Image (cartoon, rainbow, N blue to C red; front, side, top):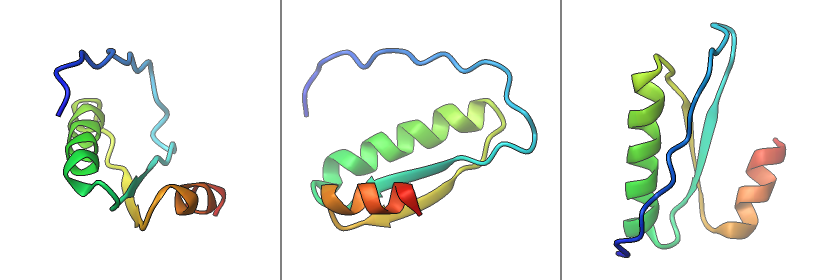
Length: 67
């Protein structure tokens, strides 16, 4: 895994009714699992519990995002 610094994302106020889904490909799972975990930790710090969706690869990411 690269030691490249991941940019910080600042989250402002979020309405209670906001729904967030995190779509993750299982292709390159060693990388995507780490990104998913970090994403969930960041969202949890802001009191957000996202829906997690797993897809096979990059082509399915688009279809899942449109659904």
